[in-house]
Length: 65
Image 1 (cartoon, rainbow, N blue to C red):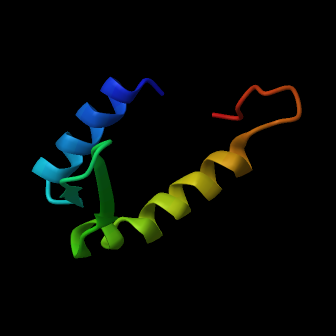
Image 2: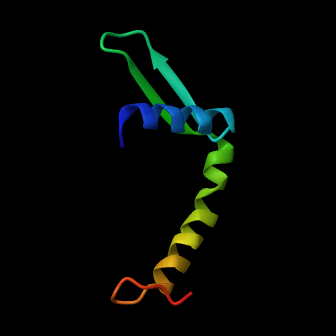
Image 3: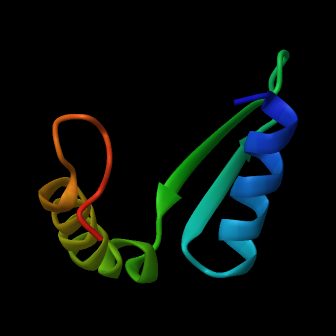
């Protein structure tokens, strides 16, 4: 993923309260990101959705949907 796209995605997740960004005043600049409580609350439903999607796949890559 291009760094610009990653930055925009992380800023959107931060705006939505799912990620906390911690910028460090270093050279080169460094930013650490971590999930907020709201972000952590999405893990279980996202894992369930991923498991459902995997269960719907067939060998050839087509889905059973």
